[in-house]
Image (cartoon, rainbow, N blue to C red; front, side, top):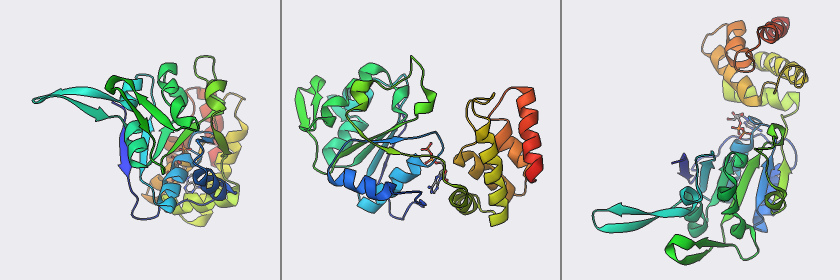
Length: 266
Ligand code: ADP
């Protein structure tokens, strides 16, 4: 089954706000609106929801969506054990029952029939039909449904249907502005401010190559990876090759161009 983590955060997950996203999410949560975190991969969406769950004092149930995931995986199923059959709540049901925030990461990865299973929870009635159990669960008043969506990866096969999208309010995420991103990279990667600034500059240039031979530029996550390698003694060039160049391209000419880019900063 999909990876599932259930957390009540005891310490604050580090999150550096970039705009008004904290206030926006607090209002969305107060109104219990289904919420979509929209933005490229590795820009801080998951860290943000962890931080918000901590801030709001709610447990967080995270599900990394994939195409093998069925509605049963999300909602629950009957299992056989020595005593007979026992019902086991899936992560979505568990969150709805207990009043957690349920975060469905990369929802487009899930099949359409699985995505449709979340629709009744987004209605004003906030119900979840457990058909196999002959039960209609009314969501706990603290429950909230949150999904992430990266519109950049649009394709005919993998897009979020309008009928799903319009059930959510959206909070927009982008890579942070350079000073903020450098602060994040320094904090998360454990490097000096100057090293972080240079990594962020490489990242910004790589993002300009998006659509010119690169599908995506370096994400904040990749810059943090590069910083973490540097902090552990890997020379900057090599660290950048490992974290920023090789994962981004299979094309030799593009890899050479990216390496040249790294050379201008390190
Ligand atoms: P996403 O869910 O958008 O793919 P993540 O939340 O996993 O991205 O972000 C990747 C990493 O980048 C995080 O683990 C964290 O180290 C760092 N990060 C990105 N943005 C922020 C931010 N605003 N504050 C703190 N850390 C951030």
